[in-house]
Length: 366
Ligand code: SAH
Image (cartoon, rainbow, N blue to C red):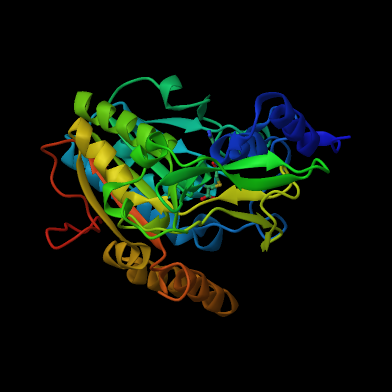
């Protein structure tokens, strides 16, 4: 007998239809309408499963708000302008963003806030903090127009496929069931179609190499870029991942801040994988958008003036708060913590000046 709950339903589906791709498994584990991880759990924070940058330091969302205000001016200050966040979590980034945006009153007045969020639990939390927000299930549900889009730790939650290099070619790694109805990984047959998914730079990898691909992330980047071709705007995508195609299985299950078995308890652990920024860049450039980065998160925040912002906050804070403010920012910037693994990539409408934080031509936002 298959187990009860989501495990059991996945096992029954595999018995009926055959093994699932890792991406199909991941989509069910995260988004099953009854028992998916994001349907039921409140994942983020010390009492959840993982902690994200905006939960660590208010400076993160504030600097992103000012980064957008700076770009908005260079876009010609369109009013209204859509401010879109993908996967806003507890709404913390956007709350900090809006507070910083309020220092540029005409920018703040022009903002029309759209949140793309799958989780009903998190939507409720976001609605409470961001009363003006309009919700959408995906980017297609957001109207077209001048755009400032932000996504932090969203792309890593999109389903990835895994491919394995065999003796003679590439095979897809699949999720099957064993004789006791437990979920197990198996490798499919080597075939030319599987090989066609592998980035050219990795196709010649030695036997045993695993490669992950995320067509949902590439499709999303293409969709954002297409919007940026119709209206002026920019998107800031921040996540953990690689700047260049890199082999290796990175899909991981996290529960209560610890790694756990990928297949043991679908729906009870967060699943995420390293983002392939090269693939995202390529998909956006194919549509004609200009791309900046990815640059390491630490460098990006430092260039935006994180140090000065910390000093200003500390000057106003009671002494006992100062250390935690400094520690929070250090976690985001230190290369041994989130400073290097996490990266920022900007997609920008052609013809706009280079956005702040990505290089030498930078104009610092004020
Ligand atoms: N950006 C937040 C939360 C990151 S967790 C932060 O930095 O704290 C990932 C977020 O994306 C959650 O809000 C989750 O519910 C949402 N999410 C994941 N997959 C999604 C999908 N396919 N469509 C819409 N939202 C999704």
